[in-house]
Image (cartoon, rainbow, N blue to C red; front, side, top):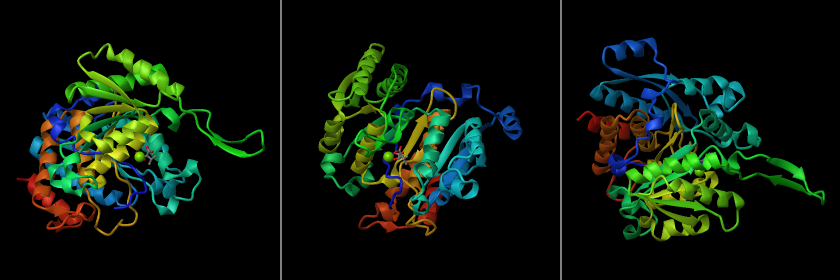
Length: 407
Ligand code: IPM
Ligand code: MG
């Protein structure tokens, strides 16, 4: 599966999931921004839980895999007495085509007013030549900033069924379970000044600014320490403090925050070394915390341990309000509309949504168990196909999944 968004991340908070953090602060049950539809209110009064979700299918394979996730959510909802109210909005290329902007105001508003947001994927060849500000990617960055989801959780878990699918040796990757906590709304992605200009020699230049404030580092460090506490108790802060001032401040603040989390073992690593170490010996890592661009890179590297970017979900959460849940892979325009897409990362993103946003652990587990069972039965889409397995398309994968879910 080709990805226009060359992202990464890894799935399944799966096995670790029991130990996984539930970020109390992102629990919409207690947050003031939560809105209920009147139908939702009636259901809630009747003792049923209703969650309002904004769906952003986006571009490419997005709509195909989103459909699977919604059917799965509805089925799991039936089992666990949860109902969902959906509102679908445009973002990325689809929004550019319809409204001339990758993030219409109405889309962002709807996301902010919902309990959680499920996004599929954005981008495609068609919009690749647009100027930076008008590209589908800009819609995603605007969404992250607008929703203030500063903490991006990108698990990299090697599933036993797929350990052979990695390009690395099985004994190196087997048992890997890393959580990359990536700062998502600051750093060089958003720093000012940025732009184009001319230098003293009259030559054109392009520039960006990598900047972090103390409070930005403190809040992501807190999230990461809390996650590490609930996982293996080890946190590695990744930066480039041998060269960058912004990283020196980062490291200082992480060390300061550590005072409040003495039960977590803290280590520090330069990003270049970290890139090497995740390939050399991934099992040395438990939880990693890092800035926006380093997290972008290291989570892509970590995803290849699993050999299956088509399997990896992610969660982006803020200190309150709805989070943004999306697969790590891109919109795969090369296979869009051909019933070839792997819907599992999208489905697992829905599981992350249930767990991290609503604390619906049992419902999240049902989904993850159904995914596991489906893989155990040998069903594989093209991107994770291996000898001796059953090659299926998106629809057949959904059928297998639904069967396992209704068991
Ligand atoms: C990711 C992607 C995005 C990023 C792009 C599509 C803007 O690579 O989510 O990792 O750089 O954050
Ligand atoms: Mg990326």
